[in-house]
Length: 594
Image 1 (cartoon, rainbow, N blue to C red):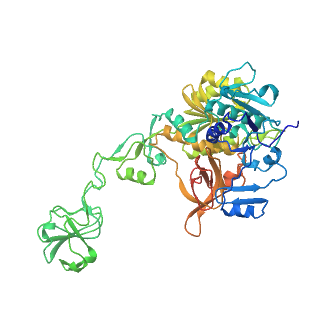
Image 2 (cartoon, rainbow, N blue to C red):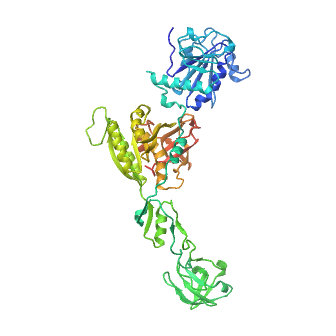
Image 3 (tube, rainbow, N blue to C red):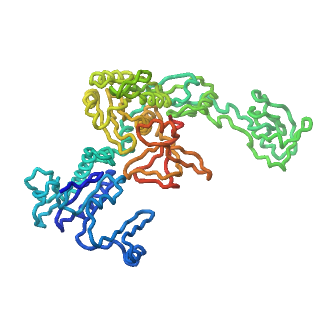
């Protein structure tokens, strides 16, 4: 008998009628979908059936003579084919599936054919075992333990059965020599973390650094304030005029005219208390004379010699108008710039307005970076066969400099435990955080795990995201360590999602969040339920005044050019399988971060 093949893993459930095959598959399916698997089911029926409903258009057209009836809607499509003479074979049915959109095919029935199967058996059915005569049975799910070398699963333990199916799918994909539609990395096993779960676990272990440094004003730009900055003066220093005009006492508002007794320019003052019926011509920012508390704008005034009158048709005079009180912006002792706030242009100007010429900031954090792998070469060298130039270290350098970090570049580390151990020890002594790229995938993790476990506590995680699935995080001698993927795009995406938030917390930012926008998809965007997808995109304002986004070129995790051409990441969340044209998606701008 010929083995039945598919381009994705094929697994059957073999059992006698009454065992509960359909019920079991129905229970497993949602758990497989939660793990990120795209599953098709082929069911063999031993009796006549009709999935169409009498009276429906498709039923009428099929009964009128259509041997193949294809019906399609926005959410699903179905092909109904009449087979009056010959029943369709399993290979034929498999070919009807779009296997490019699948990770696994489950088969109910066809138990006599040659393909991998799990035997289902319940003692109450009292039927003979199938595995003894079928070498294609790879496991047994039963309510009875037997003497067999095959893996045995409790037929009522849906989680255990799901784990076995996921493991089978993963191993079958990895061993296949055909074009791979799915791989182990595409399947979400138990323990795979979501992006939010991974980020939360990391941030729970990151503590802000307390390393104050006092610098000149201009050197503080872009840094975080270490200590509350209190105002040593009132701002404004004096009660002053908010515009050019005339200062009077509010008690004199009802007078028809006023005697002008002086003029006050900015930087000067009128030394005498204002008397009844008197006015002083005053400029914007000049101190209001004693006893004066109201200013009438110049455009409303008519001065003849030393007498001034005001045109009330332009507006009634209100007590206290156009006057800024001393300390109205900041009172003596009030916090002008709070701890944890970033010094930008307004803050720098405000501190200068207080007469202060220095600020105590959080010192820039020092981040050590290195690349691993004998296949990695430094730019400028003559390229050797089977080697690649190190781009990751330069991308990380730029990202870190953009965050105001000091970078300790430790270069490229050869593939040896001694070199890695020496580098990590050096990094832990010189830096506040350590970043490596490469060497954290499933196959590589065993190589460096010994060294990392010796020097600290490191967890190797698989994050349910693309690109950037493998991630290592922990501490080396108390210093946070990130082991990032080796692919150029993956290393940048994982940096933005995990490393930057950790750096921001170390720097002292309070509840930092990346800037995001909501945009309209200008093209269909596919993803996978349960996985967070980051597509490189370009967003701009469309002709209708809406923020619109589309993807940029190939989305391969090794194609660095796509990051150069993109101005954003399009984030497709785990609960969103795809976005059609016009659907809303989240975009993370890159031009302010790269």
